[in-house]
Amino acid sequence: MACQSDGCLGDRFYVLLTCHCEERSDEAIPDNNVKIVPMKPNTSTQPLIEMRGVVKVYSTAAGDFTALKGIDLQVGAGEFVGIVGKSGAGKSTLLNMITGVDDATRGEVVVHANANSVSVHELGEDELALWRGRTLGVVFQSFQLLPMLTLVENIMLPIDLCGSFHPRISRQRALELLRLVEIEEHADKFPALISGGQQQRVAIARALANDPPILIADEPTGSLDSVTAEHIFEVFEHLVTEQGKTIVMVTHDESLAARFTRTMRIADGELDSPPERTLNEAKRRTKDASGLDMREKNARSTRPSARRAGRSRK
Ligand SMILES: Nc1ncnc2c1ncn2[C@@H]1O[C@H](COP(=O)(O)OP(=O)(O)O)[C@@H](O)[C@H]1O
Ligand SMILES: [Mg+2]
Image 1 (cartoon, rainbow, N blue to C red):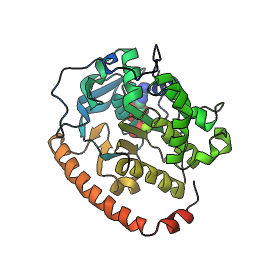
Image 2: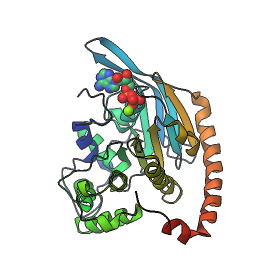
Image 3: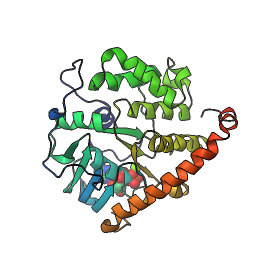
Image 4: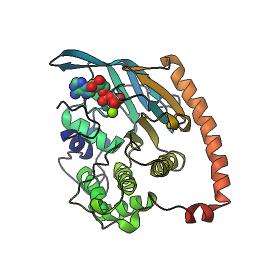
């Protein structure tokens, strides 16, 4: 499906949302349902996500257009990587390569997570959907909540479809996730009755539904006012520092660049950092950032009531 608008994901959204599990048992689905590409065992030096020479060429009526020109990127566990670039730079295309929503023209994306090393574009459609549901949570600029379901039902749906958790606890888990993003009191409302910032909190909770180690966020603050965007960004920071999630976020907002544990820039389908520097730099910055996070956390813990009490949820 050709769709160039960030807000227009159409079928892609439903592919990302669902796991297409053919059978749902009371037990967690065994790992051998996903094709494992033989590789070295996952070690602390191994990145979670590796993009190797990824090229994406779109064929259009006007001719071929190269949207990604050989992307090399490594993302380590616990990083909060920001990829900053203008509209049309290739940000969404890059994320679509990691999620496997779109085929790569050349190159490879390997994800080492949940004790598996998976070459994303070698998976078949069903394997890919299952792997994606358990490995990646995706957050979009336009929230993409299902309007006919309540907030808690929006989160229960991917839990029930994927079968990672017993159906009896899916509502309880959904409520816990809504509590994590501080929106639990609205659990039984429909999306149209809450604000954009609140909808984005729900979308983040939905992305966490099957406890994926990685979150992929495509301009998640892009349609929010600056105060609300700040609150949403804090939710992502919390997920990295407190929940141990790894996040790759793309944005055109230069003001966010200093906030990530590592920031890369993309322009005309090319990333700015040389590939051989990326992992070491990532490790150093993640270490620095975690030090800062602890200091900030300690500072906050001395004034929790002031911070919480003065904050209205956006
Ligand atoms: N399905 C498609 N077919 C043809 N061209 C596309 C398609 N998707 C994106 N593009 C083009 O690829 C370039 C990068 O798009 P995109 O990754 O969406 O940019 P960004 O997310 O940075 O705004 C743009 O020039 C866009 O027009
Ligand atoms: Mg985009």
